[in-house]
Length: 104
Length: 313
Image (cartoon, rainbow over all chains, first blue to last red; front, side):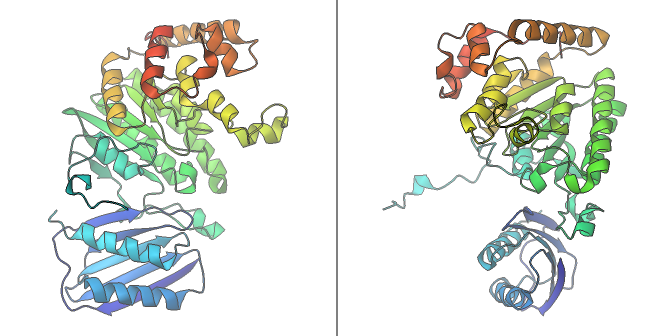
């Protein structure tokens, strides 16, 4: 297992007011993303525990792209990864950000 | 070419025709219960993960593969537990099991709400085998104690991992079971039987054999499951409501009736070599047609063959 923590400063706060959401499942080629609105509004942290070691650069690129597209300020993302491909990671992150856009 | 037709888009509301088999544990709970009524206990944000998986360098899941909480079913309070069959095959570990044990003990103490267990499990998680086996024993005791307190414990089985190993034992302790064609119920799974007894005893690669021996249709016809439903969330919901209303009280008389039912079943079918023989003995005219039969036709057939006695179980 490998632990990674990626920190970003965001343009704006994540929309919506939902405090917590979870999406996905920890299975081969899949991952779960837990989101919590617990950070200052211009910060975003992505904590990753992954079964596939040595892919730190790919994670950094996928997360940087996600933060640029969605600007999820104020949200901490916690990921348990079962060896998902980058496109699956991007999809799950986008799903998680979308869930947090609701009001409750 | 796919036409971009406005009516073809999925509706915004809860889709009760959703496949139970395809849905995640969280989706099953959300669609099964009254809208927005679910309140999770020990949710993923509390990060009560397995203390063992890290030792094996394996990934954890924040809810350890089971969702437990309270909700309402047609307005009435229920306690619910749902296993996620895709995380480690829905297997029971220490935390996973403790969450279900705690829910059942709360149900026993309150003695006012029914319990729904959405099984989706291959049995005990091998990486935490001793803790998992102990959890199975604790859960079985907790199911019986809850039932003695007057609580109905209904098992719903239709997930991709089926209901195997210790899950099959717990299911056998429930007040009543709902099963779909995809929901297999057994203790030893196909590969386990083949490994221990040889391919002549059970060929685990013979999928038709697996389904007609352990699948929902056979469990319904043999009396192992009370209700057979189509693979839809609304069908499971309707069956759960029916069984909460109709399953009987529990006591020594129930166990004696169940023992008599099982002894009678063994006497009648003990010499049968295949499920097909049992179905024929039960009076199914064309037993070979059962595996391919659509759900609605099978339900009509099963109801005609026999209804499960409600004094047993």
